[in-house]
Image (cartoon, rainbow, N blue to C red; front, side):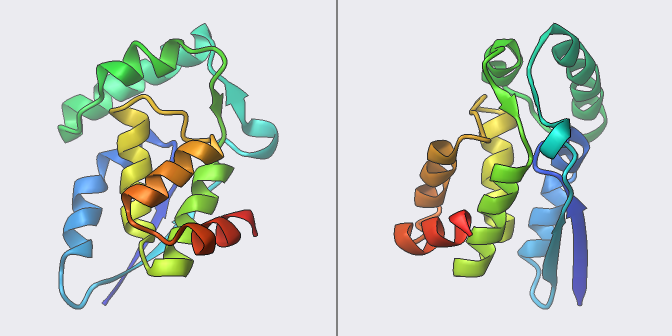
Length: 150
């Protein structure tokens, strides 16, 4: 059985379904094919500012209420107040593709990026942060880095 998961790593509603994706990932006979969007890529990437913070916080509170997915203080009161942070879907998407290509761990990288973003308030568009996440998943540094760059 194939489950096609269409997502963006910076989409709160995609984060809402993470427990379902993880359950499917643990289910024998289910293969998950990831299809990343580019919600905040190219000309749509942006820095966090007060307007963006107000926009996403309303959605995130609704997502938490409907799904039970937690949002951390480091996200709400750290990352969403850091006006130097870029919201750019492309680097985390490249990390997910690299994790899948090198070790079949795209689903795990997506979950790690979402946890890093929504709970830990990490800058998930930063290649150094993504490299740390790859090491968290015990991905081979050289193979991951080569795939990520390509």
